[in-house]
Length: 134
Image (cartoon, helix red, strand yellow):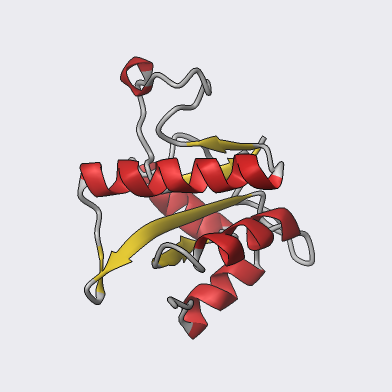
């Protein structure tokens, strides 16, 4: 059975409990890594400046001042010892995460379908690794 690395566990611990519960269930069935949890101002502004985020600090759900927790997590599939960013693999992984969240009764929004209309073709910004509490 897959399990999170120490780094992934630390990143996940910076997130709200519902996200921790969700990804602790996901990892039982689909190997993955936690790329990002809480983000400080410097990191958020860097991501904004390089185009990885559309929001300045503190507007992202990744932004919180401890002891508050992040309301967002970035996660990606981990296959054959490496993170896989390829779009088809990310779509498969994201669909799995969304299904597990639904089964658990956890309302999330995914960065590949911001308006949650089940149409990934109507988005103008795609962040396939991003999951946030709705």
